[in-house]
Length: 342
Image (cartoon, rainbow, N blue to C red; front, side):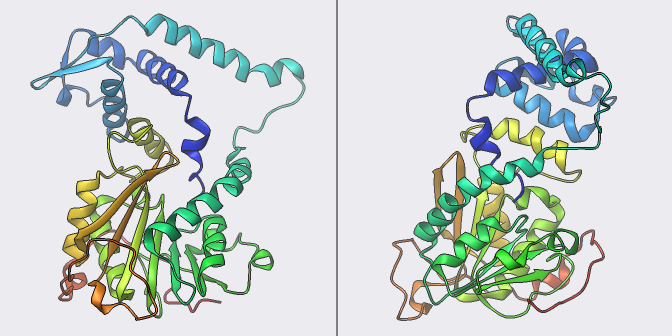
């Protein structure tokens, strides 16, 4: 969840990102190819990880248009302004060298860590939202998969008995557990490569599924279904519908950060969840803070403990997984297997 604050920072920056898209299109030669119209298959000189996402974003802003198998640039009105704006931005980015030419900036440095300050502000809001939608209770046990900085999981722990933060070992190694409350535990594990011990009342995937290759998401959902209690809930936070703010720009953002990443539509997620056994008929979707939140139930309402109150969600009995995992394949990453949370 290192970039979960992305929408909060960029909410009013559409013009800037349109300018960057157009600048990249012109300097890469994509703009020139699209001026006279071209088949998708004739754009093979461009990296497929990026060109599809860039085309979708350009189409959403009205710059290109599809006519059958052809795609063509149809709106040139904003091109000059966009190129001027991007040139202006490059001058400002060069300001550090102008201020002190003797200082060599480290090109490998980045400012992602500064996002933690914004995340500190947004994490409590996201946690409270999840509590409201999923009906989180004080006696429950939750798993935060792909915890990143761990900020969201530690805020969620205020509302429940225990939260397990789960992320791959290189991320978990950077956690400062001394700052965590006593009911937060750590699990250094890539969930795609090992088994999470125990059962959970809820599992949280905040800005995580888009970092997982499409061939692995059903496998991920099935693993989660198997560790959920019969009444458990899976909550996903991200961008799932084309109407969501910055949805098309987010495709490019994911492509820039994750080689095998993919932005899933709501229907894709519901189909994959249904195959894993979740109750998609009772799915609940809300939009807030620029995000979509999807809440899925692993079982029927009459299986819930008597101490839990109804959240008002539509429900239906989810089917058995029938050992679906045995038939699933996908690329795996070698990590430590099956550690216990500490």
